[in-house]
Length: 89
Image 1 (cartoon, helix red, strand yellow):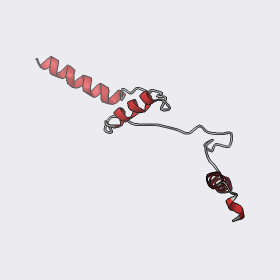
Image 2 (spheres, one colour):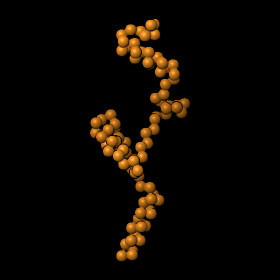
Image 3 (cartoon, one colour):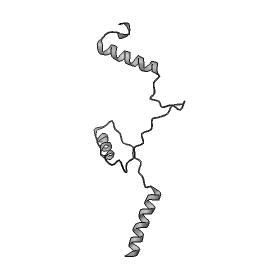
Image 4 (cartoon, one colour):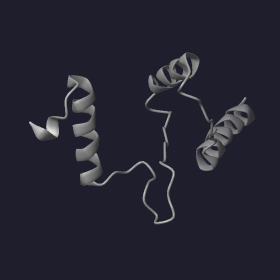
């Protein structure tokens, strides 16, 4: 019995040392992918999400915009929504 307890304790200790982890790539553009992520998010004490942005040649994330680009996107979106060029108002 003692040997079994020592083996269980040793197994727990080894698992903590090795940090047995799994890396999965989940497509969240689908309904099933989003459902899987929601289920995983319920276990915050054991699940860690790592969602890095792809980097460009300059080392910055590809999905970044300058303030001028953001301003132009906002004006364009408002112009499309209201049907007039809001920059001229």
